[in-house]
Amino acid sequence: MANEEYEDYLKFIDCALEISNNIPRYFSKYSNKIYCNHQKLAIYILMQKMRRTYRGIISWLKSNNDACLYLGICKIPVHTTIVRFAKRISKYLHLILDIRKADSVAVDSTGFELESKSYYYRKMQYSKDKQRAKRFMKLSIVADIDKQLILDYRIRRDYKRCNTEFRSMIKDMDINYVIADKGYDSYDNRNFVIRKLKAIPIIPVRNYTNYYGYLKGRRIKGDKYHQRSKIESIFSSIKRKYGSVIRSRSFISQKTELIAKLIAYNIDRKISYLLFIIRGLHQNLVWIFS
Image 1 (cartoon, helix red, strand yellow):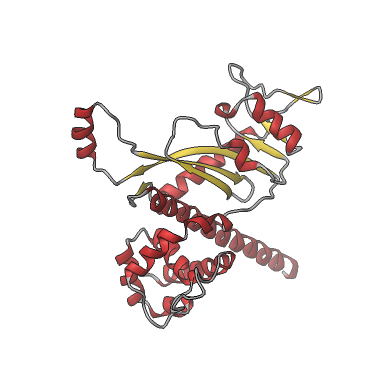
Image 2: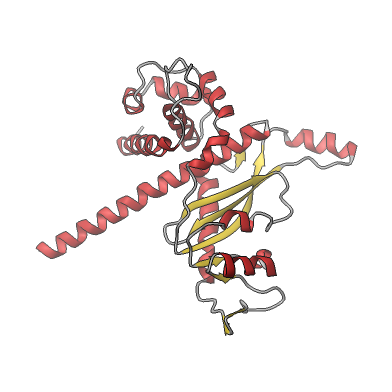
């Protein structure tokens, strides 16, 4: 493994431990306290980043002492420890991805393929019963289009309706613009953005071209609408880096795995954003003293 790549993993572990402070350190006061939830969550998120299995990430830790030192563990956990942790952590993960402030946000959804049933099984078995297997999990997100960070999410099995979670995701957010495609065009959605959030909805009106409605008697400009493509870039980055297939079998485990991918993306994005700022400051200092 290249040194730069290994250092990236160590930085990732540091950030994962930092954001893990939002969840309880232990599930119970009677826990054996060999490993805390912060360490387990960091391992689980790292597993998504490296696209490894439970056994695979434990094998990687056994051969990388520095990573264990960063995690603060003296003894390598068995893979079943992480499996049990993944089943219990789902109800706490919303505490990590809960950023409520941004200037402009975009809302969109995509699907992730499920691996619980093979293509052959779906093709043969469900063709006989004349039923369709649920092969996808629906993910809807709100993203800050300036920093390209995921602010909130909704996950469900029904992927046909695309605007069900619109209002629940952006409620209580401090934002100025909400950008979405025609799939989210409705009177209720627009009224919610204008009256409740005091923001401007940049949502194209169905059956029209370059028309986004009116606000206080003035036509809404669609200058920011082209930035909606950034949320598509976020989806592409998540699927390319962390995989577009969910390997878990139960719905709770599938949901936990998908949220861990989102957290891994946010961590990588924050690291990149911080490095970008540091490089900019360095270039300014060089220009000033040259």
